[in-house]
Image (cartoon, rainbow, N blue to C red; front, side, top):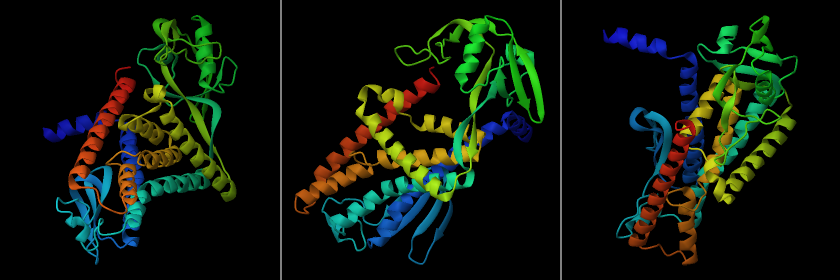
Length: 385
């Protein structure tokens, strides 16, 4: 009975859903692994003893211990990771500075190198992933075609015979260079048939779909772009719809290694500049910031689109992770670097145990606040509508 129920439940899980889940796990595993590898290699270089390098959280699933006594493990939940360095926990008597091979027994420069290596690895890793993606798959470009990501049951589109995965390459005789062409033709139809040229596998079909009037349609301007309200959400009103979700088709143009290196460098810089710009526009943070749910949504979409899109998305997230970790907020790497800077200004004298605890507590509370805020933004964006 239990097996039958399980198989029935499994049958309801679509291949796209499985791809999405695997895509999310793959993206998190790769970007966190790169970040932690930076800390790990730097710690070794500076003579610190690494106790464990872990991918994921929770119970150990796999583990290997090398001759140096370093444990390499894979944990049950592949959504994170950590590097545990010997002697990283401050002690009330300050004895952490006496631990042989310990983090705090090394000088300020060594500690700064180890702390900064994670963000540096994330940024460098993002650049390398971008380069490899461009060499392997090519440069992504938008094609004048639209893919139907979903077709609502009982909708005008389903009634006309459209299916999920269909490629629309003409809308009333026009090439859909962007989604606006499709939206505009649907709204201008006023209920008259919209003629679509559709590719389905090896078949080319001509489909006439008659949009239906609705009171909850995302209104568009003269270019077919959504009209936004004061909260930057699509303004709803009376209009026509066909009951599909569309996405511009991405094609990949082959490029040489030199051109790929140039494009990877340019894209990395654009991501760095764009991420920095986000934090200078405080009033727009809620519109530009995304958390785990947003990352999950985009990872799932990229996984369903193809491995090339997933690789390039992983590069973007890796670079962004490196930059966010440089924020001067304990317990982030940037916050720990700030403490190293304060100690350097004090002539190398360690902060008192009480001061360290106070800073750690304030940093933790601020991070919890950020996590709650980002999750709230995510939930409002993807669930609350």
